[in-house]
Length: 259
Image (tube, rainbow, N blue to C red):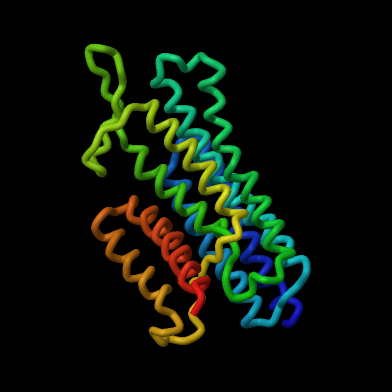
């Protein structure tokens, strides 16, 4: 029985990896909603493998390494492929899509898996990250990008008489040119990827007790997530992750101030 129990956490990790691989396949093929759902399921199993290891006391060096390998697929490669596919589609709406300069924007998608790998390697050897995080966690980063791409994917390209394209984003009650969207997403991908390896402390969602004082940030984030998703749908998920970053930065600044 013990031999079976000790394999449960690693089995859950392998399931997370499998869903991450499936998300990558869906992402590069343009099924962004399916890829996002697969990433979300991978995140659930990623959380459950650590929980199972703690409850069953089934820790192992192999499990730690396997968890990081699964995370790079599920939360690095999968969202990176989603963004690559989305940016590639944006290129076809541009009049200068044959330019080599235009193709350089696709490299922004590579930042997600590359910096996710750096983040995971750093996390494995950083002894400071026991109860909180230093830098942006890769699952949260993957959820941010997968939900953002799904929110943007229904955008309809409209061409006027001057042949210039405009993306009509009804969810945001605004319009944006493909060029602006391409540049904006490319810059954002690099910026958020750099947060993965930053020294900014980020609070954990693990709740050790139910008191408001000890879990104020967690409760604010959970309540805000419910409100944002209810009001704005999929884009509310992205907004929740951005709020998580903001709350972490504010909390860090407050703690760093001299008392």
